[in-house]
Amino acid sequence: MLRSRRLALLCLTAPLWLAACASVTPSRSFDTEARGQVQEYSGRFAANYVRYGRDEGVQGSFQWREQGSNVRLDLISPLGQTLAVVTATPAGATLDLPNEAPRNAPEVDGLLEQALGFSLPVAGMRDWLHGRPAPGSQASATRDESGRLQTLTQNGWTVRYAAWQAGAPGAAQTMPRRIDMARDGGTGPMSVRLVIDPPASPDAAATPAASQSPETATSPASR
Image (cartoon, rainbow, N blue to C red):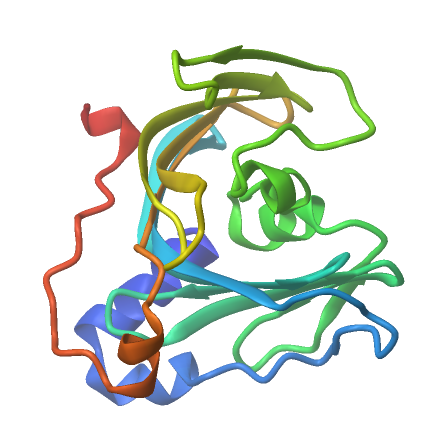
């Protein structure tokens, strides 16, 4: 059974094993010379993929933090236990898993797929989360009547912006609410759905929010 499913099942069905799903401390830090505003996103993800001829799926929540060219992505089980932490800087990328030595590579996307069986296209998400094509590679895009991205094909992925929402308080621009991504090439077909939480207001950031029932990030295959 794949690591992603095994870890999720341990966290869900075996309380005695929760220690194995404890929070993961990132072994790579952001570059000290990083410039720019720190931006953070959170939400839910669902990934469907084919591995060794079998249909597999995993879902949970994610936390995204970026500053300049530095990115950190936390993947979290439905019970709130950290499954993996990916940190990418100009110097390289590191994948941290519970109770395992850090894995390092020049780029980030391959690390996830090798270790977990599925991949979130972190390199492209740096820009796709902002509703824009990534620079430096060819892209084909369509836009809606408001000028926002509707579909984007880039780096082997087809990205569909299914819903938008208001941006940060005081910001004039909107931001993606739901992004559906699909890949046909690579090591096998894969689809990923992201549901991004609304940005927190300054008052909400200062006061702990009440428990809410977030929008479910259903599997793309269930549509």
